Amino acid sequence: MAPLPLQEPTFLILTALAEQPRYGYDVIQQVAALSGGRVTLRAGTLYGALDRLADQSWIAVDREEAVDGRLRRYYRITDDGAAVLSAELGRLRANADAAARGLRARAAALLTPPPAPA
Amino acid sequence: MAPLPLQEPTFLILTALAEQPRYGYDVIQQVAALSGGRVTLRAGTLYGALDRLADQSWIAVDREEAVDGRLRRYYRITDDGAAVLSAELGRLRANADAAARGLRARAAALLTPPPAPA
DNA sequence: CGGCATATACCGGCCGCTGATATATTGACG
DNA sequence: CGTCAATATATCAGCGGCCGGTATATGCCG
Figure 1 (tube, chains in turn green, yellow, brown, purple):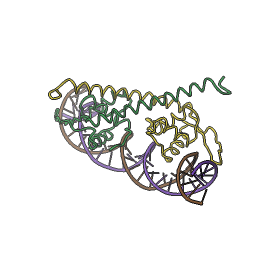
Figure 2 (cartoon, rainbow over the protein chains, first blue to last red; figure 1 turned 30 degrees about the horizontal axis):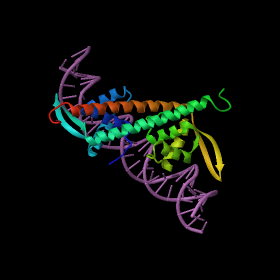
Figure 3 (cartoon, helix red, strand yellow; figure 1 turned 30 degrees about the vertical axis):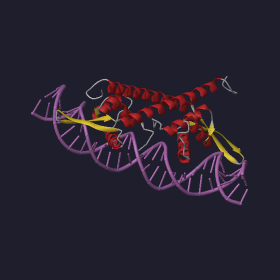
């Protein structure tokens, strides 16, 4: 049941739901907030992802509320979902560290070595 | 020129090339090393990505060597590529931090609050 | 001399994301 | 009181990157 690694939209949806149960439209706004406005979830992405994540039992419907005649379907993250998110978190940090090392090596190589730089 | 965010294979290819110029087959092995053996690049993924990255001028052909009758085509990362990788590094760290906050909030919520947990 | 590692290359298919469109209700503004 | 934006969920065609498989060629080892 493992299409890891997660892509960014899915990752941020899980992150938004980790903090607390939320309904779809709220997830969109929370993801925008989490990402400093960089990521604006499309409706198609969101509801497709919610269905998929629910099928995988990484999230589950928490409850449904009707507010002012509008339905709000709340989802919560499951233990499985939290475990996946935690694993993904480790993967992101490992990749970030690897890239940082690579870029540092490049910076060093540009300063010191060969014929031209001076 | 911006299909950001990068997916993991592309990200790790750029990372491998940031450290030093490498040829395709060497990239596969370096990516395996960088990821602790977790990521095994497929030939189709690698050469497709190299072509795509070269088209975007994020990498460039460095030189070609024939060793024992086998061609080795070396690629190096460009300044543009390094800038993209650096930006991606920041994105990964930001997302990792966001997920860590979310998971921490969940852990706290599971310990303290409502009816059942005790 | 058969098999494995090296080295590059191509292609069908899958799957998640994009962008668009649809529907329904409520609140704000003129 | 009419109109538009925001709220809230839903569906779908298309795209693009990755996977898995296959192909080709050479060198090394047993």
